[in-house]
Amino acid sequence: RRGNRLAKQEAEANANADGDSHPLPPLVEQCDTPLEQRTTVMLRNLPNNYSRAMVLAMLDSEGFAGQYDFIYLPIDFKSRACLGYAFVNLVRPEIVAPFWSRFDGFSRWVLPSRKVCGVCWSGPHQGLEAHVERYRNSPVMHASVPEEFKPMVFAGGRPQAFPEP
Image: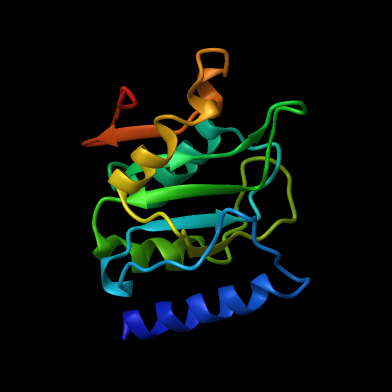
């Protein structure tokens, strides 16, 4: 039943991608990973004044501490504001449904905001390995980029060094 609900939500998210109400960032594309094996989601419509640390604190306070192994909150380097979305890889596919349920419609921000969070699938990259490969040689990993603007990996809930290229 959960798989059907997520498939329906995925279809709605894809339908919204073509409309004006919830445009998706250009990084989100179709994904070839079977629905039941997916672990990476995108949180959309985050407050632009949220930092990576605030997103991590939100995930942990909502009951998902230790349940994710990758997060990336893209930042506008000029304004130092987040772009309003984040990629989160959950450690097991079974965690996706409760995570999706908790954050789709979430609005209990620690800073004043009228935004309402949405959840959709990450694509084309799914899983920790795919995201590590995607970002390990990315300009965002350059030494000149502030640490808090970079993707993070975790093992057992603890931050780990991002794998070298």
